[in-house]
Length: 286
Image 1 (cartoon, one colour):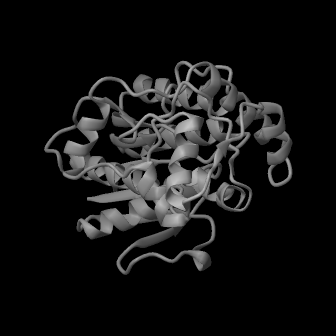
Image 2: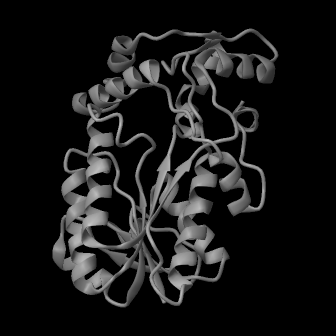
């Protein structure tokens, strides 16, 4: 039984591969450039692209379970639909898909709406699937570490409603556990959705207070200026993506990303350990 991981060289995909290998799974990694792939021994590296049907048909041969991860891109929805249809055509029934929390509520945000559309296609095609819906990645804040430490400001416009931030390592481990659970099942299992959240729901002021404690000096919250946020992002990403992120931040401010009752406890039980906290994350990169 072979588990195929897409997005295998990214932040989440690489850790999913590692977690699967540690658990003794047979893993195939789909990459655009095999020369740049660096995986544990035994991983079957195949070249392919989610917009190249021929490469996917080849990569999907002999695969029992698929981990589908699409990066934020203008053609993200098309990539996912090509992959899902070809997986079905090849006979793959079992799937874990990395979506996003509130994909069905943040419908004005392009990459949220796209992921919600993919969820509906997964249901329509009848996959035995786990849909993972992570909240805000703690690791997003690696990019603003220097701003926090040098200027004493936490600049991400996350608002006052609260985000249930989760560590990328926890996401990857949960994905690996679910992939193996579906892969080894004697028959296809019913579909499930998991909200992937951390142990705490944090506002901008909460996060600034955590950084103050970790650094031992005052850190303030920079406020809710999503327009300035977009302009800062435009320095290192395309305009369409920066605007997408601005729209997302707007929903942080108006709605937040709160877990449902029991979400965090369910995940801790699945992992057999506590979820990583934002304080632990901040201390590790300070």
